[in-house]
Image (cartoon, rainbow, N blue to C red; front, side, top):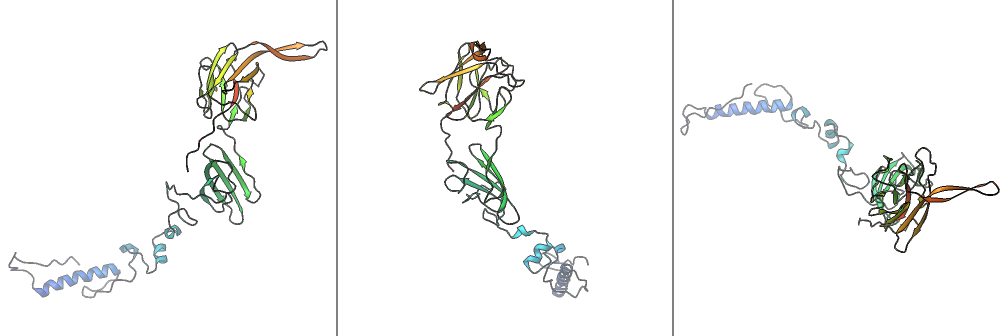
Length: 321
């Protein structure tokens, strides 16, 4: 049926317009067609049906009278009934920064949480904080975890949390590659070499940046400077001195397999300044026919190598959580 338009007649007087009955019949016909269309039923123009209890989806409704059935008809998944937040069972929001602090690293269930050395039992590092990524097994106390610290360290474990041990990850931030290519655990490192004339394209690899004309320091040794005082004599300032534990100095080696290119000795003053001296290798044959390695003439660091020096730096100041 075409829309029934009521003729209002002339302005003000209404002359020539529909009478009251004709006007209401047109209105009734319009409403009847609207009801019939919404209900999806076909009736005569004069027979209107009631609106359906559940308006069909095709007509802009949900097709149901109950919430669960309505969600099903609209194709909504189970997350439609969940609350956004950081509590167990909540839906995590994009860019949400309200992750809770874990009471213990033995956190079960798929989750993203924070840890602090003060508030989390089993925290892997003292005086620090970081994040926990946890993937849970379907049942029991099994799962997999990655813990990261603001200091750049990271740990992982997989298995039964009651017995699985945290293992630290070694990466480009906490290892260093010596001049001979061997990897070793590291922290604040400075490399002594002629930065401008060095033949090694890997001298300034990863986080190493120039530390004076004769040095390159990684990002854990900011502010360290290396000066050349004389042939084979170098002074390092800006640190607390040589590392107090672990390795301290690695002599220069050839890049083709680690053959030593010189012998170093070091000394440190009360202010933490370190002096490194490099000498040529000198072999001496004793009366019994045995060869002994000793120091020869002073030697500048060969352009094909460098000296690795591990330092002690001021304590890292953590930002407040």
